[in-house]
Amino acid sequence: DGDATTRSEAMGPQRPGTLLALLEEAAATDGGILYETRDALGLIYRDRTTLYNQKVALALNYRAPGEVPPPLEPTEDDQRLRNDITITRNGGSSGRAVLDQGPLSVQPPPNGVGPYDESVTMSLYSDAQPAPIAQWRMHLGTWDEARYPTISVWLHAAPRLIPAVLAMDIGDRLQISNPPAWLPPGVIDQHLRGYTE
Image 1 (cartoon, helix red, strand yellow):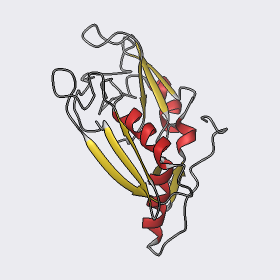
Image 2: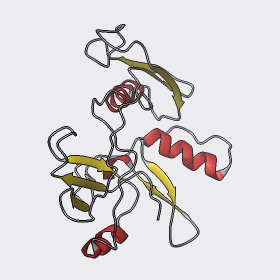
Image 3: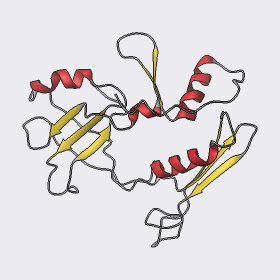
């Protein structure tokens, strides 16, 4: 459903390991999502490129009855903050990306937040890959917006949403329009990373 024109990351030689460990290694290298199917015994891999430029799978309106019941609370935390990232190719070169200016930079407060570093070794095909992957992961790790760990939908109060909610899967995009006044203005745009029924 997303941008299928960008290729997934090419990997290096496959080393011995369990099937699940090898699948997780592929997902980590590409930056996609590996998850269990909900209607059968099995795994699904959603590659990174399908997360780009998606259509909105579920459009919610905060002011519509039952669509987004309270609480709708953003979390301003450092759980995913990474501003100094080193990616090493297994048996090869490494690349590093450091955010050295801005509110989420490695500068000490009040000019930044200090260093939040991460070093990852990946199975990569060539020595040209570590630097751009480090840049991309730093971009994700310094995205300066609140995240919404939980978004509830009351389907009994908004039954018109049932088909769209049932069709959603991990990685799909949802939006909430008309957020309340105490939240930042503009549409809330999120990816579904998990769900509870």
